[in-house]
Image (cartoon, rainbow over all chains, first blue to last red; front, side, top):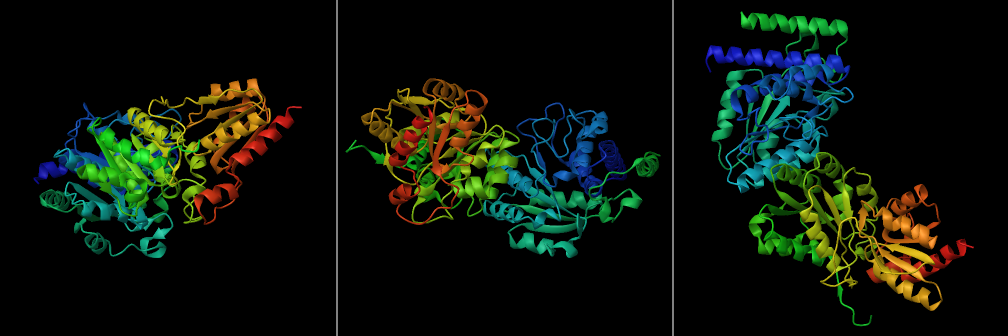
Length: 280
Length: 315
């Protein structure tokens, strides 16, 4: 990846982060921490990887994306908005009565959303179903799904993993957002799913662990995923919860709390500064 | 009635799936390691490339079915009622019904008539569970013929459908010429003293009860309510107006099922007494199905007793 593309992706990721902060602030609720940790992966997928067309959101040959950790919707919506699926202004009414953008992704009401999610563990199964459908139709689109690291405590994730590898769904790539924090504390404190790569490997996945904020690593891992035949692929992304907003980083308290006016201003100022430097 | 044909509704499910495979290119069938019992095994034999076994993982099966449906497939997902509506309730609610995806749930082995396997497998709560999900259509066929037609109708409509089938071979009520329509009740016998609204295998019991009541001078209207949701409000309201009392009969808990659905309509429109025949808020027990049905009051005798009690309320 050349420096220019990397800069463009960093700009996209920063804009996604700003949208997530904008959305959670105006909603007075939502999940900033896990939105910010997934923003770089979302930026890479939507601005460098996936074949999607905002003008034709339900094009049958498009790549599919399922946000299995549906609570990272603010970042997801940010990616979709900046990609052109809808106006970024929608972020200002996220979670409001009558607004399009629901607290968790709603495929029926939101262009670009391929699956309604929010109840943890279910999105990845739906992604598996989409990958199976592609195989049955001899279609060459790929299916991506981002899961939370706490989410993989759900048994259904492993039911889905078993099914995906049994059906040899090599068109499926899941990305685990391993920020190490869930609502009630660190993963180790709550109910450790570690070691994560070994578990997915035991379930028949090709697995690798990367820095989920490094676009070169994301690019290489996703290319390897695409080249892997006969089995699904899992990318365990080591990430920082709250990434990009210094006072939110690695703070479990920022899992599901919206910034107040002062925090919003501070977060936006920091992200605007980041953006300014990138655009300079 | 002596030489009436007896066949389980699940047989109609399996046969209809095979026939529908030729109608719908996008039709797929899933099961959770119960293909022999749910009769999807028949489909698997006929169309192995269109059958997917999720193994013993019903929750995943429902969400995978949702993903397939979101990609244009018409998916029939099957298990026992207990593990479909029960274990996978939330997947049906969130993965299938909330996005309104085109998944048909074929739930077999519903109710007490599972028999010897006992309470853990005797699901008498599934109608109640499915009924509260917005947009869910629920069909509980009375016999083999209605089961088959119901599967056809479910395939034809867009959106989630819960189809409830039984394990037990039960007498047929209809024949091949029967016309089934989702949301449409059928009046099987006319009468104005009392209405018996029945569903599933209780329809045949209701018809036996009607004969008995007739011999005692009580004219009972028997209505087959195969579609529990959306319920045929017009048929219920007409019954309330014209007969003044209603007895409901279902192989399901008296809480949340057909009896509740009928009572809700009646209470808000034409308030008349509604007496419910069903499983009386208890768990099942092991035993031969036919005996269990009597033990749990799922019988013509009980319907007759409740119908008489209902008629007495009119005085």
